[in-house]
Length: 159
Image (cartoon, rainbow, N blue to C red):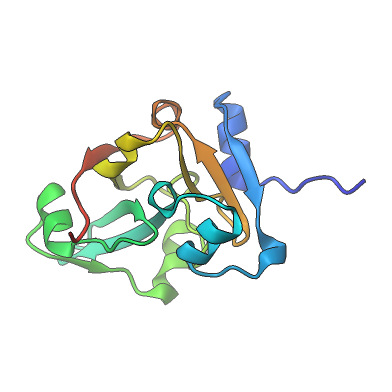
């Protein structure tokens, strides 16, 4: 039997003794967050994408929003005390975080960045997000996620 691959995210969760479920959707061909939610048969409101942004002052911020929603850059900037932020360019993601586009997770980045999760996450017992590699998702309770990363819950999506 082939050993199930563990991503860095899963290793970090294991090391902190955090309970989580892991999902592998490699065989489905799903690419977008919405496709991933469909492939896993999950409510897209509880499946979150991890977005990395940069401010004019070259500070980096991580935001997590449901896959079918969009990050409101104005609200997000206000939440982190910046005048303006923009999405990080795809080519800068790997050197900065250690993750590729589509496999970016708030857990296990090369360096921790201030993280904000859309407050809609409070509506669910658990949320799903990237397992740190394309094709992998993890499902974790917000309370348990606090054992691994610091984050704030704020309204950061476009209505």
